[in-house]
Length: 61
Image (cartoon, rainbow, N blue to C red; front, side, top):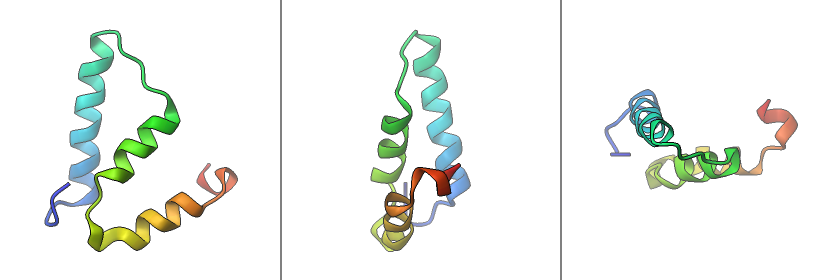
């Protein structure tokens, strides 16, 4: 994710890549989805990533 990209643009690009992988028969566990998404967020949004990582699974539902 580029610093100037919106979160929605980042999610859209990510979903496109996942759809391509799925069409070729590859499956990705939910936890890995979260890790991949959060590992590509810029440092300026570090607080957001920390908050998401520290949230309980109940809060995420």
